[in-house]
Image 1 (spheres, rainbow, N blue to C red):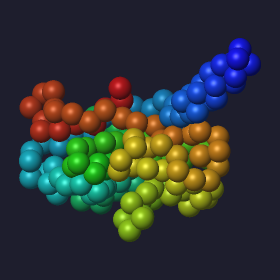
Image 2 (cartoon, rainbow, N blue to C red):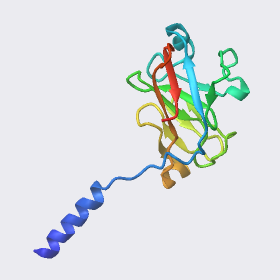
Image 3 (spheres, rainbow, N blue to C red):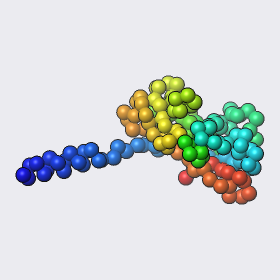
Length: 163
């Protein structure tokens, strides 16, 4: 009876144990992106579910966005997404497997995932906070670096910052 109980407890622990995701592989970099008005948020932000936009200040992406002198877009750029409920979420666009600023995930709007063009890893950016879905990222447990999105602090409508 004791062997059976030990086996059941071991099985339950194995089945219910959490798989951890390392979403802190990207080197620290400043993030400060602001949206001054509802109109600017509706144009560049994520006003609806599964909408997304990439921001890379030093490459002027998007080309007509009004970056300020204090704007910062992280290590590989900021990938701003509207989750499946329409709430804004933000990630560093650098693939955590490659960990290079110039290797950015891109969003596949049909499959609703972000994918690395180099290693092929995919990430759930719309419903599971940048968790890896496939490829080396999934086998290594590397998720996308997340950033904070919330109401602006100094009169801005919305802002994205490091936590």
